[in-house]
Length: 76
Image (cartoon, rainbow, N blue to C red; front, side, top):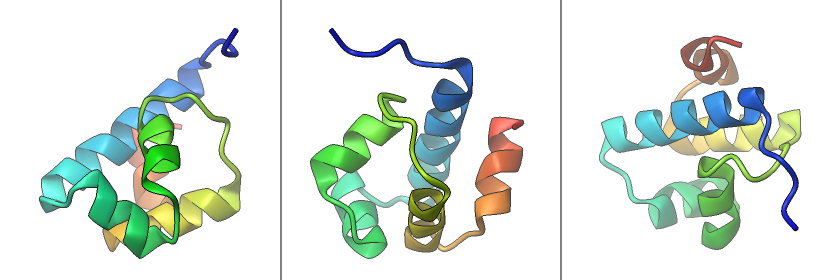
C-alpha cells in the first residue's frame, strides 16, 4: 500500500507541476534536464515521494528556477 501523501508533498508537487507547465516543458524534458528518470519525476509531481533537498535542487535547475521559488509557490 502506498504511503499517505502529506500535505507538504502535495503542495510541492503542485508547485513543481505548475512551474513546469508554465515553461511549456514536458515531464520527459524536465526530468532529463534535472538528471532524473521520467517515471520518478512523474511520481514526484503526483506527490508520491518525500523528496530530498538535493532532488528539489535538481528539479529547480531543470526548470531554470531556484528551489526557494518552488517552496514559495508551494507556500512552504
